[in-house]
Each structure stands twice: as C-alpha cells, then as structure tokens.
Length: 102
Image 1 (tube, rainbow, N blue to C red):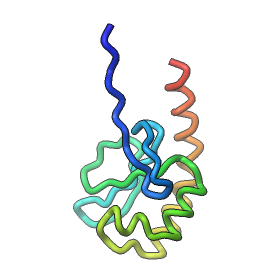
Image 2 (tube, rainbow, N blue to C red):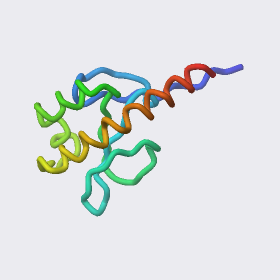
Image 3 (tube, rainbow, N blue to C red):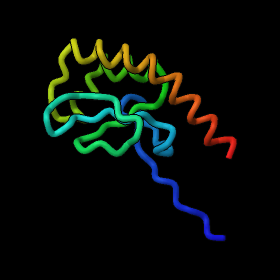
Image 4 (tube, rainbow, N blue to C red):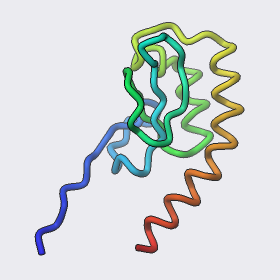
C-alpha cells in the first residue's frame, strides 16, 4: 500500500520542521482575534508552535508570533494564550499519544 505524505510545518520559536500533528496552531482570525486552534481548520493566518511551554515562552520573548501573524500581539493576548496553552498542552499531548498508538 502506498504511504501517505506527512505534512511538515516549522515551529516559529525553535525553527524546527516537524509533522503538522505534533504542533499547535495559533491563528489570527479574519476578525482580528488571536486564538489557539486545536483542529487546525479555522480560517485565518496561522503560526505553529511545538507543544512545549518553553517554545511558547521563547516565541513570546522573541516576538515570533508577532512576525508570523503579521500583527502586533498585545501582552493581554500573550497572557490569555499562556493560560490557554497550559490547559491545551495536556489535551494536545494526550491526543498525540493516542495517534502514536495507532
């Protein structure tokens, strides 16, 4: 059977190419809000971060999200994303382990 091609994306913080399913997508919606997109299907401009809190902090420190989303990301949004990221990180890692088992 023919093997499927695995889509790769680059983490904006660590600059590592990884399979898309191992990264968390952060999207700037057409309305202008910045949110975490676990489905990977929301419309808007997206940026990918590997599922580690260190990468998120590095992206915040270097303003990598600002550049990737092409909009200045305010401190309040970073704080909201940090709270969301901690709660989402556990779900993301659980989903990743479930897909690895298949």
